Image (tube, rainbow, N blue to C red; front, side, top):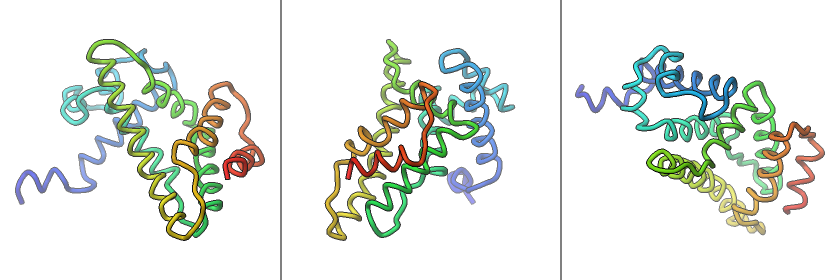
Length: 192
């Protein structure tokens, strides 16, 4: 087995280090908010060398993007229930559950952190990480919408789902407002 094959091996030390770094970052965001800690502090909390973080992710912003996408994919996967209305209701409920759960505020802060417009290389890296996260999640959402279109259903644009379903939920969480099932269902129903 060559080194390339070892690097792709699922599980093992690499997966454990990734999970530790993801958890450390999520905890620090929850405790301090973005911009109030360094890669070295993430590494120390995760029990790894900061060079490991730079080698694997390149920047704090890339790590933020990966943590967000990993969490969203695990906690709020794109459903395939057989109808767009059911898919969107399930998806919205999953997102709401994730952003209001124990790490929910930290997850929302991660999303907000990636929208920063800092200057210089850090600002550029943040924008690239944000765009990568948005593009991947939009691609996943588009696959759900494409399945519905193939079934003959009328579908909104992916950005309409973002504007009319996801954005209001994130805003409510940022401002400490409740997300009730009725509110979430209403967002989807109004979109459709």
